[in-house]
Image: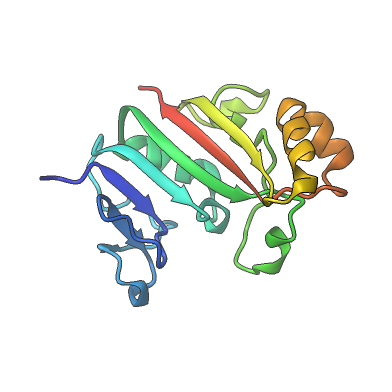
Length: 173
């Protein structure tokens, strides 16, 4: 049976039901490939789901990466992404992070912002969550940040730093 899930930048977090991709041969991926080298070694419309957990921030060109995901994903495929939130300490510890992300970062590929002209490869936003570490003090911050993300990022992110952002996008073809 052909696997229809692609796990980008798998590291040591392999998914048993997915094609696991990483550029580091030491993590024993199914496919060894640098995501900054395009085109990726997959046919158009190959995958019903793509996971990109903690990998997009390492890519040189986010728009080109999202276009390549769009190419290899099927119509209505679900793309699951996690990235560090720009205010989190994690975003500044890892020197391999090339980008910082806020709650509206993927609006470029959903048509949800004035700069959506960078690509014609579009997605529909299904989920966008600001995720906090599980502490009692973060319960209220999480609820308010996800209800009013612009206000949170402008006024409160420095006091109550988020852990990461989680997005689910649907491929529009």
